[in-house]
Amino acid sequence: MSGCGVEHSLISVDQALKLIVEKTQALSVESIPLQQTLNFYLAENVYSPINLPLFSQSAVDGYAICAKDEIEAEAVFDLIGEIRAGQTTDLFLQQGQAMRIFTGAKIPVGTTTIARQEIVDLLDLNQIKVIEQLKQHADLRDVGEEIAIGQCLAEHGQQLSVGAIAALSMAGIQQVQVYQYPKIAVVITGDEVAETIEDFASGQIFDANAPLIRAWFAQRNQQVDIFHVADTVEAVKTLLHDLIKSYQLILTTGGISVGDYDFIRPVALDLGFEQIFWKIKQKPGKPMFFAELSKVDQTHCYLLGLPGNPAAVYVGMQIYTATLLNALQGQKQLPQWFQARLSHDLKADTRERFLRMSAHFEQENLTVKSLGKQQSHMLSNLMHANSLVRIPAHEQMQAGQIVQGIFI
Image (cartoon, rainbow, N blue to C red; front, side):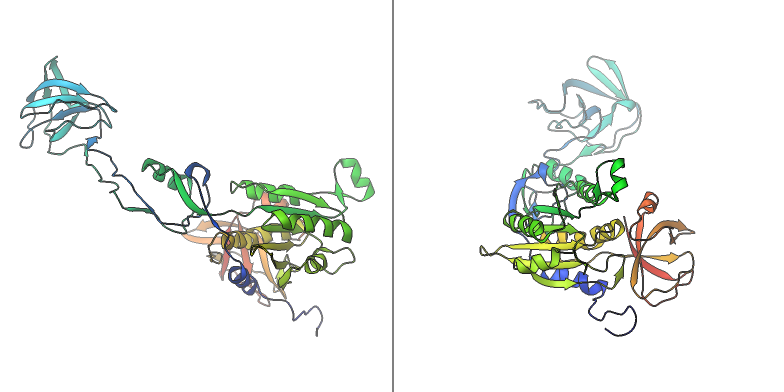
């Protein structure tokens, strides 16, 4: 170390993210029911086993008509029957005939066009009159016009959204191969957590980290197991030793710096974890720790240690935990940063900063504005922030400069 506040062992944000992507091994593949796959990543291409539509059908409520040519207004047709959605008929249409039909119903043989009911007058029980000119093939859905048998519906690595699940369900897909989602343990360290207002008198504080992390995962349709551990070597070692057996990812908050009661890193190393990195040149969240344990059954357990300050935890979740979770599910991708214009000047800092900002459009340009109360122990500005913005180290930023960020 040389120079006030300089630590040469610190790595950059981009280096840390690259190490997460390169060092993390994807979990195994499993086959699960489609209805359980929200936000999972596909481990296969999915092909349609059917045509969509399955058969040629009516797009509207109206009348199936058989006519050789375009139908002129006031044309009359003989009505020979009715067919509803979900039904079939042995009747077939001949020239000059029509059949009452409803949306989604399979068209009878001989149908050349559909007359929607708004342009049809019922003359009697046996005849209709089309009151407007009608082209051939109007309001007909052809078999396979949306999807053909064997067509690729979804690709390997695609994340399954609500819309994707609906589309696959429509094609009759019931089971898919996905990357296994890790079983995650969250360890909240510290003796200072308050449970009631009265606890403040003894110097304790309310825990924001556990609710923050639980909600972060719930937003992604995932659950985690949360543990609290006292600031002793024995307690930390006993808990981590037990968690290694059942979890693929251990996420910790606090206890990873160089204080007298920061035991996560030394205990993890003592248990056999191999350090991948420790300390990132960023603010907030410098003392971040990432390590891997190779187990005798050839599987792995990863430990991502986040600082204890809530703002650092939030940054760690949005930037590093998200990247790690993707890598565990076979997605070797770095965060997708947006570009925006800074609306005001910013002073330089020795470390790269992640600032909570408000992003909005001004005259078609995405613009970001920093919010107050950016210290690592403060979270109140998250009520208004919708982005985390990267501010480079050692650079006096001017209004109008382009910066990178992610939406939160």
